[in-house]
Amino acid sequence: MNKKNTELSISTGKPNVRRKSLVFDVLSHKMALVGVLIIVSLLCMAVFAPFLAPHNPNDQDLYRVLEGPTWEHLLGTDDVGRDLLSRVIFGARISLIIGIISTFISALLGSMLGLIAGYKGGMADMVIMRITDTFMCLPVMVMLLVIVTVLGPGVENIIIAISVLTWTTFARIMRGQVLSVRESPYIEAAHADGASELRIMFKNILPNAISPIIVAVSIMLGRHIMLESIATFLGLGVQPPTPTWGKALRVGYSYLEIVPLYSIAPGLMITLAVLGFNFLGDGLRDALDPRLRGEGDKLPEAAL
Amino acid sequence: MKRYFARRLLYALLILFLVSILIFSIARLLPGDPIQAAATQNLDLANEEILNDLRSQFGLDQPLHIQYVVWMKDFFNGDWGTSFGSGEPVFEMFVRRLPVTLELFSGYVFWSFLIGFPLGVISAFKRNTILDATITSTAIVGISVPVIWEAIVLIYLFSVHYRIFPPSGYVPFFENPMENILCMIMPTFVLGTHTAGMYMRYVRSSLLEVLGQDYIRTARAKGLTEMAVILRHAAKPAMIPVVTVIGIDWGYVISGSFLVEYMFALPGFGRMGIDAIAARDYPVIQATLLIVALFILMVNLAVDLLYGYLDPRVRVK
Image 1: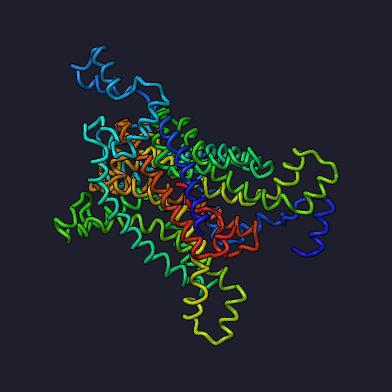
Image 2: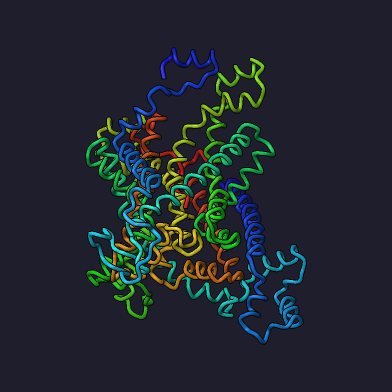
């Protein structure tokens, strides 16, 4: 950041983050580019599933169960004779929907609470931070299983459970950011200008504190897809006959000796999805915070 | 230092209190009255009077705050209730399963440090080379691979295809050391590789930050060898952030151990927890969650202490 830039940001109260070439920065980052390609392919797979899938994912053919790959069924068939490839393609839908919605809710909730905790301080900060510390002691994956057991299986419940358990990550990140931004000269300038608290929070602080949240959204999206598939794998998540990667992984695992692809293919899709979002997250981090370029990460890695 | 530690200890106790209330409430929210559930499995019990007797025997007819106090008191006296599933005291179940989980943890530490630390150091020194890029991307792949899938792939390769390791099961070390090691290699490796990627990245970024400091340049200017610079000047400060994140990541390792024990049918603590959740065996669920929380708090406390030792500035703050 050069001197001229700093002065400009003080006088206008505008964020001083370079914005003009974020997309370019991300796309010129090799790993991020790979991530974007993976994510775009998965999104296309989910959106155009009916056109891409060679068969109806729910059509059973009980004469042809547990077959290996053939020209008709490129990945083979499952235990009730459904086409595996079609089920894997349709499986992208539920994983992405759950991942995107739960990340959106938890990021929104966490960022708002983190913003309040960091900006207001005092009692609000104390309560919110004690809650996040309490959640830190209980591993998300273990608690997810317990909460889904309480709520019962199903798509909505798994979204609620994941969001309730993961917002603390966003709250912590946001609070830390707000604390460092709060004392900046341009915030002081906005105060002197007579701006309302809400205006300062949302117009001045939020845009300057949002970068790590964007990175975290990408990384957590992958995490949430992984959490959903684990819960479904253990029989607590999305219920049949919806095609899901987690369920295929589970049933396929029992037939590992006969048709290894049955569980290996859906597992590979989960891995690719997580990998895509992790790669993108890394690229975003480098693009949004040039100081950290190639310096690894400053975010809590673990969320599971 | 003492004051610093006392403050951390008090804080941990406060969090433990909050966690215990959370766990207590969740266990009460689990669907299905456990006594009713036991009754449907055993028709002799399906009599309202007997059910009420049973409820008072388990203390379930008491007001909630009394139930909480009794539960906490019993917990710290080693009386963790009895499993609804097997009728066994939960404490004994835990003690019997602990060695398996501890063995899994030691194996995980072995693999993750063996892989994560050297790669992190190499990556930092070969910064921005192809080697660095390869190691860094491999680390992200390692972090991204779900434990369950890695387990399935390894079981397929080494148990189904090559038949080198047993696919699941556990043999105690003192019964047959060779078999024990054979059946623990895959589970510990899966858990280890999962965290090795994270440790590699932490070590790399932390070391890079330290190596850019002026005192490292001074050390080099004194003519010290690179090895001496790392060991005498860079290692200790570079460990500070690494130690912190290892503390934070314990929850992650525990989650991983639950899944690994489930996948490889290891009769450990995590398997006990997952089975209890599936069976809604809530004395076991309650105890499992509280032990996990207690364990994470203790590790975090140990990290705080270590942090105070590694970074003298912390003690003053």
